[in-house]
Length: 86
Image (cartoon, rainbow, N blue to C red; front, side, top):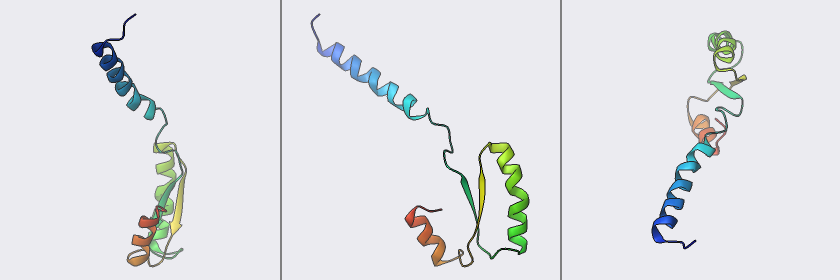
C-alpha cells in the first residue's frame, strides 16, 4: 500500500479528533473539592459552609473539604491561587 499525502493527512486528522476524547476519559473533579472559608472556624461563615458541604457531596458525588483560612480575603488568597492550592 502506497502512503499518499491524502492518507497521511486523514490519519493525522483522525488522531487529532481522538485525542480530546481520551483526555475527557477522566471524570471531573478527580481531587477532593476544597471549599475555602475566609474566616476562622466556629463563625457564621464556617457553620454555613459545613451545612452546605454534605449537600454538595451528595449532588457532585465528590468529597468536599472545608478549609478555614482567616485572612483569605486579601493577600493570602492570592498567594494560594498562585501556588495552585485553591
